[in-house]
Length: 108
Image (tube, rainbow, N blue to C red; front, side, top):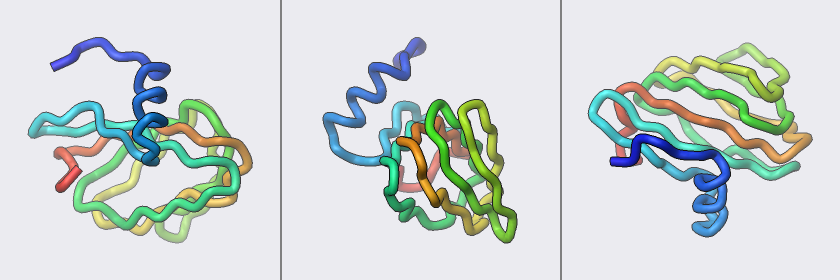
């Protein structure tokens, strides 16, 4: 298990895999990954069975959690409870988000 990581390295790995989500940590109590969406892109995720915490590293978009809508910018922290409908939209700048699931995401 790696204890020290960098966003730059994780971003390179995610780009090499050409997938929007890269999980980099999984233990029973939680899992973590980075989620990248391009400017103008679509967030196709569905509600998860786990609680979720997002931290916006860079980019600019809007996010809906249930019926609540907010602009999200670097430094934003967003909590989404399990099974709650949520989605990023109006992605104005490439978005990079740190995602934490507790407990670990099913099927990650």
